[in-house]
Image 1 (cartoon, one colour):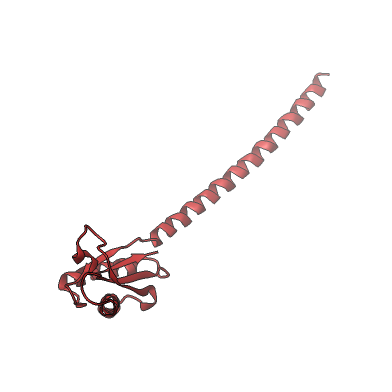
Image 2 (cartoon, rainbow, N blue to C red; image 1 turned 135 degrees about the vertical axis):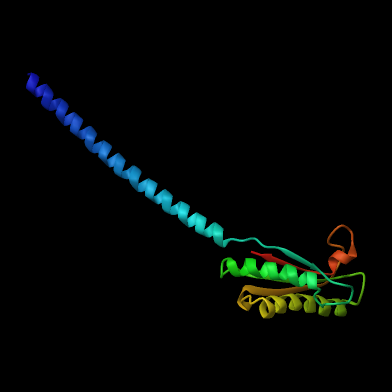
Length: 157
């Protein structure tokens, strides 16, 4: 009888070993999958660069200042080092308190295009990554200050 019990226990131990081996294999598979997912998430995070930029303009003007060009140069570096498929929206504004509706639309468009042109022509940003929008004359957007509405804001999605 002792031999039967040893055989019985050996069979039970072997079944437990097989189960442990399957669990060890599954654990290794899950660890590999997790490591792969971590790499994918890290790569995706590296590609997702949220960049916003605010450029203010003088009343009635669409010419970029030297300071604005410096800021756009820094933005251009972020764009060029980021995800090549990312698209940045450049939105031009004018303050509603000055100029006619038609003038403000034209001015907000010219401001947005000035920013786009600077990014492309001066700093080598791929034009396919830039989308231009314009809103015409708007009410005070920031700090109840109409000067802050004479602007272009660049955002990424």
